[in-house]
Image (cartoon, rainbow over all chains, first blue to last red; front, top):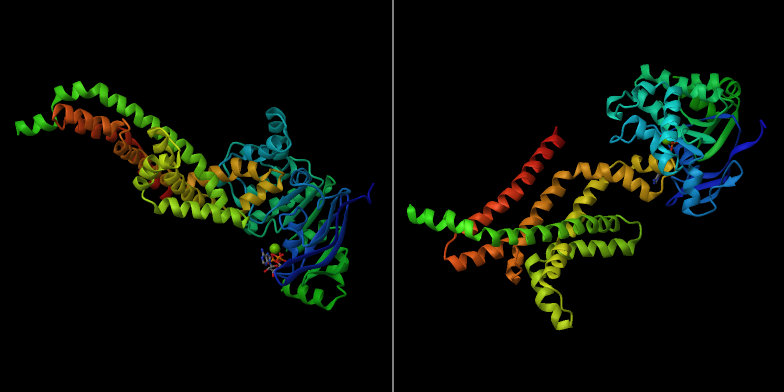
Length: 247
Length: 221
Ligand SMILES: Nc1ncnc2c1ncn2[C@@H]1O[C@H](COP(=O)(O)OP(=O)(O)OP(=O)(O)O)[C@@H](O)[C@H]1O
Ligand SMILES: [Mg+2]
């Protein structure tokens, strides 16, 4: 089922007061696809991502995850559906008062109601996958940014999400730590995870993305394969943006 | 000098007043437990109301904290103890003290909690809720532990104040530590029981005060 849509954004609109930040965005991400989102600061990339799990409440439109509309239903339905949507933040947001292991087991225990044994085992698997199993007993404050971000990825993965959203996952990292996080994301892609990635790592996009989306002023200006967007952008705004970021 | 020692440090009188003072201490401890426990719980809810997105809830809890921090606790106590019977409501001195000091203290606890809650980064809420935790679970497991740690010295300071506050209950003849010490004094015509009571308060509060300093230093580091 390569074409099964995992995440559908349907005429998503978001207003903050008088400002319309997202203007009727439509986007369909199929199973196993990695969609890479670029665009100037303030174009609405984060807002779009945050609407996908309703951290930001859409003004109108629908968000459909594996056939289920997350805009419908109660708060409890939303909590359940959020389990299927992993989110990775620029600032990691690990829980500083808990060990790495507890960070990864908390939602498994409280939201998924897994047993301690099961949650611990699953957490160790995920920490293994991101290369952080040896730090299971450490506290977030003792880890580098790159290590924290990999733990944050494990925290999301442990819930078996259907989609993973990344909002500038490497932007807060020292350059030498970026690679370790991108590698984890590449592994994830090769395992078939559906991913939406907002980032400035164009090299990663060329290598890993199935599709690149250029956003500006709250609309999707242009989309295509990495070769199309980076090699021969059609829209003037895309060209201007790319020439700016590539220096 | 002998008169001084005899008046303030009369061991014999102290020993004789000990049972009465212990009784008072026991009452003081009961008062403290009730006011502190209920205050810590009530204060949290008031703080949450204070930060609610619902405007009416915000207004009620802001009105509550403003009112009961502005009213002197002794005024509140006498009003509840001596005033309520006029409305046909009779309550025991113990209940009057608990209610009066609870209203006062939960307001202070609420302000401390509020400072703690806003000290926790918004990203913590978002990360937790994005993993499917409910708002209540997020509060209990993620936000509150961090909030409390950030304001632990203030929570403890406030608790010290509660213990001191309970001595005001002697005004309405509740037989707590200070009241009983006063009784012993008037029976023996000697101030030694008061000195002993002061010693009791000191033993009770000194570790707490130390703890406040300890946490303050640790947080500053
Ligand atoms: N809570 C908010 N209230 C008001 N305006 C907001 C809010 N959040 C975002 N905005 C506005 O929405 C617009 C889009 O913001 P957004 O963070 O989605 O952009 P972005 O594309 O992620 O930018 P960046 O590359 O800087 O992260 C900006 O103009 C921003 O000021
Ligand atoms: Mg952003």
